Amino acid sequence: MATIKIKQVRSVIGKPQRQKDTIKALGFKRNQQIIEKEDTPAVLGMIRKVSHLVEVLD
Image 1 (tube, helix red, strand yellow):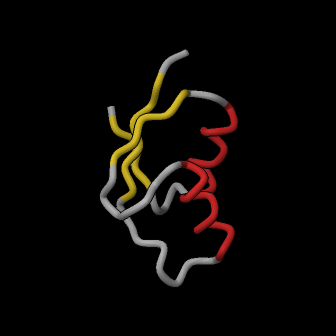
Image 2 (cartoon, rainbow, N blue to C red; image 1 turned 30 degrees about the vertical axis):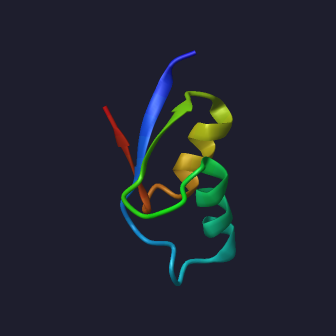
């Protein structure tokens, strides 16, 4: 499958626990980190839930 690059652009401080858990499940450990994930429906759903905290890179 194809991969997708995601960057965390906002902090999770003060955000609901569900959003913090989603960021952690995606694999982020710190702000401004870039990770590469498989382009699956589950990952795309998680990205959609925290779209205000992450940015999809080309």
